[in-house]
Length: 349
Image (cartoon, rainbow, N blue to C red; front, side, top):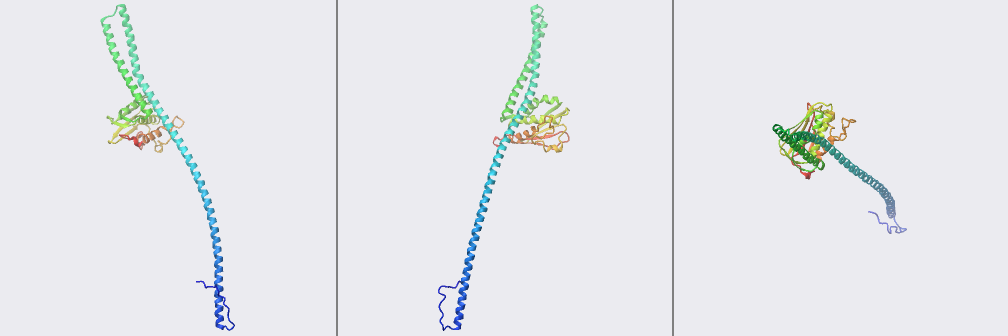
C-alpha cells in the first residue's frame, strides 16, 4: 500500500533528538521512494497507452486490408461462378443439340430401313397388277375377236384370284410397315412414355436396320423373347439399340465379314437385363474404359464422331432410369448390358 504524502513535511524542532532525526530521514526516504514509484508508474502507464494505441492502429489497418482482400476474392468468386454457370448452360445446350442430332440420325436409319422394307411389298404389288392388266388386255382382245374359250376364261379367273390375294397381302404388309414407322417416328421424336411389348420393339428396330445388317452379312436374333410388357420410353430404347447396332457394324464388322448380333432379355420382376452381344473383333482392354467418353473414337478421320455410345449412356441413365455398361470382353466379340426398370417412375427422371 502506498504511503500517504499529504502534509508529510512537518517542521522539526531545534531540540529534536538524533533518533527523531533518523526517524524523519527515514520518513523522507520513504516519501521519495513513493514519489519515484508513482512517477515511474505514470511514465509506464503513458508508454503502455501509447503502445496500445499503436497496436490498435496496426490491427485496424490489417483488418481493413484483409477486408479489402476478402471483398476482392468474393468478387472474383462471383465472376468465376457466373462464368461457370454460363459454361454449364452452354454445355447443356450443346449436349441437347448432340442428342437431337443423334435422334435424327437414328430416325434416318429408321426411314432408310422402312423405305427398303416397303419397297418389297409395293414392288410385288406393282408387278402383280401389271401382270393382271396385261392378262386382262389379252382377254378383252379375245372377247372382241370371238376367240374366248372356257378354258381361257377359267385360267383368267384363277389368275385374278391368285394375284388379287398377292396384291392384298403385300398392301397389308406395306400398311403395317407404315403404321410401325409412324409409331416409331413418334416415339423417337417425342420420347413419350407408354406401355409396350419390348421384344416386338426390338424386332421392329432390327427390321428397320436390316439393309445395313445385310450389307455386312450380319444376322440378328432376339433371345429369351416371350411377350414382355414394359412401361418406359420406346423411342429412347429404339435409339439406344440403333446406336449399338450401328456402332457394332462400324467397329466389330468394319472389314465386311459375316457375323451375328444377339439381343438376350432377362428380368427378375422389377429389373430388365438386356444383353447386347456380337461375334465381331471385340474391344481391346485399353479401349473398353473409354467407350462412353464423348468424342472418343478409334475411327478418327473415317467418319467416327465418338458420340453414339456417349449419348446412349446418358439416355439410359438420365431418361430411362437405368444404366449401360460395357462388360469385360468375352472370348469372341463384345458385350453390352442395358439395365432398365420394368416400370419407369417418371418422377425419378
